Image 1 (cartoon, helix red, strand yellow):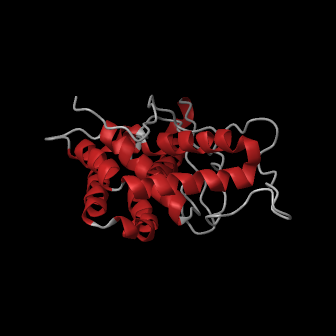
Image 2 (cartoon, one colour):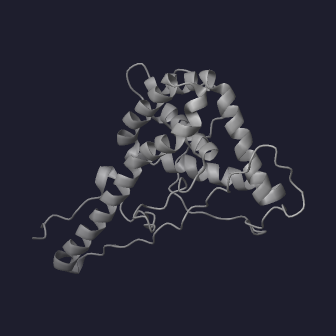
Image 3 (cartoon, helix red, strand yellow):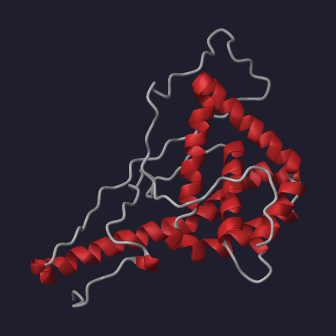
Length: 240
């Protein structure tokens, strides 16, 4: 039976919002797909950075955790950052910095999607607690699992929004003759993927190891849900 009340977007989301397409693995395409250990760890750091800025509550646990993580795991995060820089340089040459900044912006905006903040924050705090409780030499092994956990609320939101669009189409087919409803907004294009992992000690410019032309001359434009967020480097976030 089709409800007589017009369906509303889930979690307070806006109407006519674009959502990613579904990949071959049945999951929505996100900037976290196919990442390597170092890149996964860096994406986890960015996700927890967003949580530190967005998740407010008693004693600000997300912010406190994030600041402690930057201190406790400083060396491991520095190594991961250097590894990701190396990956981008080998893949994109002199355009590596721009390519990395593009993907960083996409990742920050992904984790800062307002409708998901409420369900994302508890997961971020749980992941942050696990990271603080483990030695730095276990971070790379845990990073892919942590990233999957952090992304889960967003995968669930996209599924809920897709279901909303389905129910909206049913409602419109029965009651929407005199109204205008956009049932299937244009899906977001697949976000850029990070380059492959390059081993430490790799010497750019060696025979047969020229950077691949993965970035065309013109900047890549990616449509993402925007949110006013300034990416934070390895700096402490003060209490509000």
